Image (cartoon, rainbow, N blue to C red):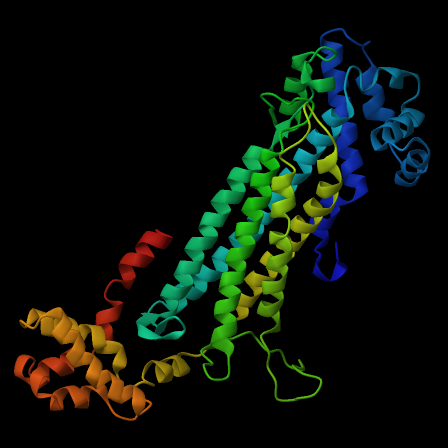
Length: 432
């Protein structure tokens, strides 16, 4: 976790203190369950809750000798609990603690990520409604296509983040799993009621078949949901970066008073935040392949997944959390330039109306191929003049066009309102 791209709210979830606190809770709840079924004496759980504690440095010291993190933790816990500690971890195996705690950490992380997505959605909804009817050019292949509105652009990104929210919520549900089934997952040494009890106390669900570890297809889906969210962030970031280009200048990141864009060129206003978000998205996506490869473990368990998860879990969650908050801030403060949007929309002399002209010709009785040829030959002249020649003027002077479409009808075709007539429909569907 790099401090530059870390929010403390998420970092705390992955700090040793939180992990060991969850471990202790698991052990204490397991003791409560074991007392209920008379496997251990009454009072053990109370001793763990009241005297139980841990010291991260001491755990590290013990682990340096025993080379086992759970044993090191239990040894340190026993130093606080005392005599009753001999009943702690009764019939359990390390993965019962490790995997269940990992589920809790991922669940906690997902809840923060959901808040981040919701903040981005709120910002997009506000700006989309603000510019619901702000005309701009729609581009395909980076080339002018037909008119759209900036609000529709943002509504599309809102819908994408809404899908991301559903995916992360589903991933949280899938990963909120408890596994306390003992060695190789047979419940031979720990009663299934212990797992059910701990799961209920910690807001989790028991794993159907744990085989000693929680199956890693659950985790692969979790990191895949994060990766898709990162890609949706990048998609919006790339759009903003393109719109900020000097030749376009339809929108740009907020540039604060006193901010500097370049050490060499004082005039620069660079899209540094959205470029940064593109990079952060790559980092989050890099967790997916290792997570997928973790699915295939030997027999009932091995630990080839462990070292991977110690890296990708905190890094992916912390990075995506930071990226979501940055994305929200970019949208909230985005500088939007309607005048430049209209200037760009009209840059190519009315070519954006070419489809409407072609369709009108077909409705007037001309075959589609012939209509396409007529419209294209006029459009190419506008292209070659770089928009200086007006498309409407050429069409009015074209005898084949004039024969089928009166000048007044041509004038009516060149009307931007035609392209905004269903914006309300889309907004109602997206924002409800």
